[in-house]
Image (cartoon, rainbow, N blue to C red; front, side):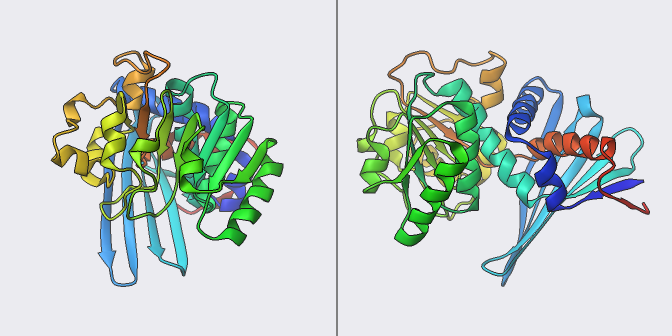
Amino acid sequence: MALYLTEQDIQSLLTFPDAISLVEKAFEARARGRALDIPRERTRMPGGHLHILQAAALDLNAVGYKAYYIQPERSRTSLLTLIDREEGNVIGMLESDILGQIRTGAATAVAIKHLARPDAKVLGLFGTGRHAVTQLQAACQALRFERVKVFGRDKERLTAFCQKMEQQVGTIVQPATSREDTVKGSDVIITMTRASEPLFEGSWLEPGQFIAATGANALNRREIDTETVKRCGIVVVDSRDVARKESGDLLPAYEDGLLYWENTPELGEIIIGQRPGRTQAEQIILFESHGMAVQDIYTGMHVLSLARSRGMGRELPM
């Protein structure tokens, strides 16, 4: 029978160290041809949008899809359906909002591990929303930062975010004085916003920085300007198929002839040594993360296995 897991079940079972390891395996499996990933499809309607992502993981004997429906400022429904690839039966249905937040943060942590300078000490973060929480939590698993600077437009919310996150991650988390302050002096920069215009100027970037842009997964969003793409020694994506379809950051650079998809490495290719990552300390590197169902499959199968071993979840008559 299929097992149903709630958001509370998943939050109690999925840790950041496990999620980071699982997402790294998902990147590697896809780069080796052991996993398939189908870019997100969106059904846009007045008042709400339905999003569906699909993937298969041969080594896990699993195929599945995540469907989430969002009504801005009102409600959010997210379900991951896992299917036994050989038997063809549903083995799990997981509420997947928190799982999506954790695995998105985990993807950034994997990128930091492979692309940031290992001596990075200062993190600059744009965003104070729920995804910014898991971005910061995961990043602090990847490297031991001495200080975090956070930029947010709402000062009251920004202050509350910094106070809360400082207790959670065990390092100094303080409001940045400006957008420029968020960028300058930071070794790693993470953007997790719903911005429709670039958050900072590429001219502010400094040698050796690593940028993880994680919010612009639609054509009406943009966090990074063209100057940033110009200044980067390497631009890395989670998936070329996804990026060419919905990267609000990179499509303008592609249209301007600054970027060619066939020359743009995927993170999985760098992990397995198929393409080079950072080769010089002074390189500026950009990672564009848009979200992949294969990450959901790997984390979801892990959580499902843990739940069964611990007698958690609810059996469904399927």
